Image (tube, rainbow, N blue to C red):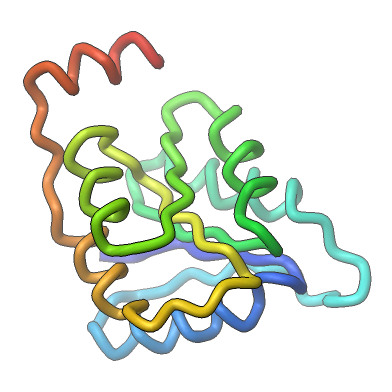
Length: 138
């Protein structure tokens, strides 16, 4: 499976950590982050990641707080970006919300980053009453 990832300057450090872990887990990684770190804008790469996610991939985004990237991604049809802070939120984002983009804050240190990624990537959507709710979002 190939994942598409992106970050601005404020999310670059966490994005690079995520990239290393994903490569170690044998995922292909399409990093669409801006090359110019002095004048990048999170809406630009968040839209690019969201577009590729709409084609059927899972994605990862980061900016300073993760909030801006989440807002931009969630404006794209068919995208459900979830800003998570721990393993439990990563699991529920997939189980209940069928999230297809994991968003992390570039300003937070995650002691359990690898676990958060594994959980997000392996947890399946439960469907049922949650599917009804997802349909209402769409």
